[in-house]
Length: 485
Image (tube, rainbow, N blue to C red):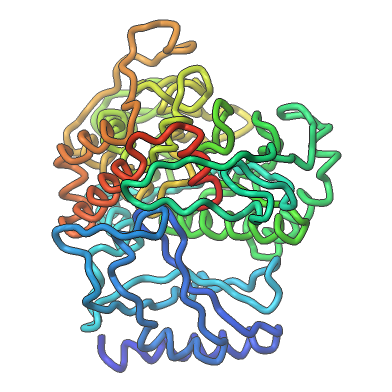
């Protein structure tokens, strides 16, 4: 990158520095999400933001092969102590953090020392798929995540910890070491209100209000927030935006909820499963396709002359058929942890079957049709994803699968009504991480879209985490991962 190309970013950073300093912001958290789904960070003083925008902040590429327990594996292209990358903040996403006074946040793109984009940067990958959709097919994509979490009292000893261990601490898992959690006190929830119940919202109204206030102060448009099914569980949905921005918001929403929770004396868990046998946390992706201002998920004839099911155009149908076809492999991206498969159970609205349906919350791919009161709102929801997933990988991989379906002219099978577990005719999605990994490694679509360095890193991390928890009981898996994400 030339000096003249760097000047606007540096000027923008200096102007941002002045604004942040005037607002009492002293530090900027620069985040990226690794392959294991952990949000990693480097922070700089506010007066170093311009330097970070100009030359980046150093960080080893080895984090792309880190596991959930902070151990590392290796892959054909990434691993070991050698090398360095430059983290450059996206100043357009720079946000003062309402629940962390004195701090701001920005996601980063990662570059080689030469200035070239880093081949395994997950944010670059998501951006590439968006650009491919626009350049090859004239498509604009809008996306949004629903985020679920479980809130418990921070003064309670969590399963797998001793009474002297903070509830947010997690037992450290080392490869080839069996997990044997110590006797524990049960989780304590700040509310006993029923699922989706007003009682829970009343009991925690100050907490939920502060979550809403913090998100609003950060210009995050919330569509809805409500108690969910599991004890202590909530869900927040935010307005759709571009796919890279949607992934950025998934990070910002989670860290905002985490910060507000801690200020109330609570611990927020975003793990796929918080208690064995309970309904786990999902983080569903909603996606719609647009061309020339028209939502292709609804209305009218397509350019090819055919009308798809439920009013979707043929292009939309082909895109969704590509996503549906690739779901077994996509699970290694969207349900990336051994704990994910404790959540991905039939008849729990998790999307455990490879099927689609109109407003069917048991289908892995749910189609949401427009209505007279919500024109232009038709979209598709990928339900089988959870918060252990890297949101940039999820958006990029789903788009890549959809584009492959569009380019192949695929069509959807008949939709499924009712619970597919009762019908007995729909294929079950993989029931374990090794099974999903097998589909992933055989996917030519995802290998080509991700590129060998990133594809190899994902496969290596999934294989290593499968080995890490090999032989562990569900209780041991949950205890070891409850506080990691």
